[in-house]
Amino acid sequence: MKKCLLFVLPILFVLAACQSGEETADVTGEGTKTIRLMRSDFTDVRPKSEDLWMWQEYEKMSGIKVEWEEVKEFGEKKNLILSGDLPDAFYQTGWSNDEIVKYGKQGLFIPLEDLIAEHAPNLQKIFEEHPDVKKTLTAPDGHIYSLPYMALDPMSGGRTVRLYINQPWLDELSLDVPRTTEELKTVLAAFVASDESREGYYMPSGQIASGLERMIMAAYGLGTGGRQAMGNMIFVDDNDALQLTINHERMKEVWQYMRELYAEGLVSQQSFAGVDDDKWRADAAQDKVGLFQWVDPDFIGPFGPETYTPINVLEGPYGDKTLFTEPAVAGGASFIITKDAPDPALLLEWADFFYSPEGQIFAYLGEEGVTYELDEEGRMVYVEEILTYQNGPQLGAFQWVDNVYGGYFPYAELDQEIRDVAFGKEPVIYEDVKEEYMPKYMLPHFMATEEEAAEMSTISTDISTFVEQSRVKFVTGEWDLAQDWDNYVAQLDRVGAQRLLEIRRQQFDRFMAE
Image (cartoon, rainbow, N blue to C red; front, side, top):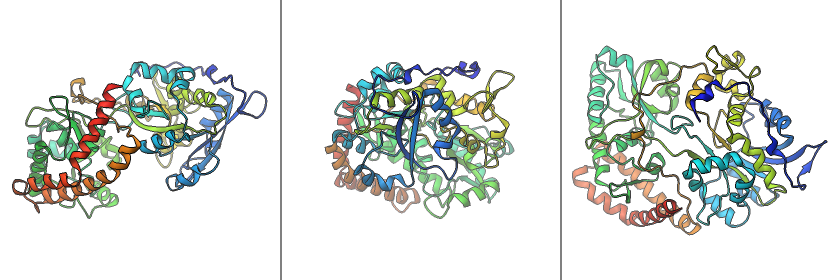
């Protein structure tokens, strides 16, 4: 969405699309139709969906009443739910890609691509302007079984993970923000040497692999497929061929770099065990954290934005500079219409509003004069009641509108600049975010055939377990990278690495060909 959305005039919510030619949906009251949606339960932190201001208002706007069924521990009840009468649609529930393909093939979830073209003009427009969104949602059988949750702005929706470095420590030591992997090592060494109570890189145990390691991987040329690809242990080489990261020579160099940080005490010695979230935040409050990673600085505490400076890109020894970011579609299981829905077109028309500019604002900010006001510059800011909510403004907004927590609803997120302003923040300007730093490819979690999924379930688990164990041993020095790397690669092959690569290449070829 363009930045001009910051200056949106008061919105006229007109939803003529929510008129269906079908007569099969339940009707309650004069001209009001009813749909039945099932979702996960959030009532411990906000009102029931039926009582939430947003859904009550949308019923008036759309003329469609929702009968919500909110389910606690939805993931544990999936099989039981599928064995009975199904809701018209599943809303914001956690179905995996493999499950979507499986149950779509069985006929429990219905194909949506033709219905989208006819009854979801806002989403269809996004498909046309961003073809990868449609490709990401398309199953191997050519069908689309779910509407997406997406963020078209790379800085929004938690798409981009970045490092945060302690700016007061940099100022105290007259150091600049590091921009290369070697500069980062130098700065962390200075941090640790300046005070024995200070840690360099420090996060709750177990998060080094999902943050620091992948930032370094991107700096070493292994981030060309984007964030989700790195999570799936793949990247695209200089010849545009898909490769595994975990057995590549550059991965050996990444682990060597991390081994040096660990050996010199520049990363927490408890990176792999011993530190939970509470201890980490308590230590952070005592100013012991030099470097951490997340999508925003508030994660470490309310002092985060004032204390930590973001680093989006590090340049590696070969000149690589790549954002650790993921595709626009973060989840494809946000809205799934079932075989029992009497009027699928009506359901699509109801959901499609939230892919429009008006729907985006309504679902996140609400309505001018009720949940937000315009500031002197014409920007939308939540009302004081939300901003001063006792448990924080985000939970405050969650008492009114639905699309501020959790993600994975049928929705296109607003640009991060608008979201920042809504909470009374000045938008962050990232000097190290440039178009040329985007990954060459932005690969999603590929849709697997049932046969691929069955084979990969065992292979991926075995490989992931072995890689996790090996990472600890290499980084802590129990294994020597010079002497033990070849044995590690050979063991990867024994547990199926080459077969994993074959399957991933098949999926890559399908994705690129669509």
